[in-house]
Image 1 (tube, rainbow, N blue to C red):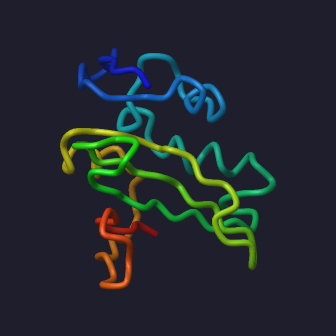
Image 2: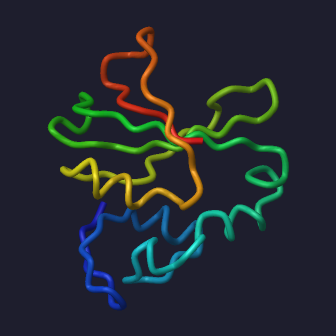
Image 3: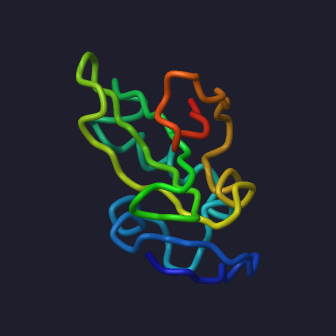
Length: 124
């Protein structure tokens, strides 16, 4: 994971180079400036997004692998096959910064009492 500054808005953000490359994100441009980048990319993938795959963004706080940080992971739901693909979408020390990195148009669902304690919220 790399921290970089967006060449358009000069906002500092974290990005996983492999994730950016796999999803066609331009080098040095934050997701906010590349409007709807995730949705646009998913339209081209036959196994995700608008082609039969539900994506759930789960925000975690203080996980064992990232203590003291907020992490958003994407859970891909293919029909009845829940969570077969899980990838890190973003990490941040700031919850607001992490929320701002999520794609626009999502709805936040607060954590359920039965969720793992590190789960903070879920976005659909």
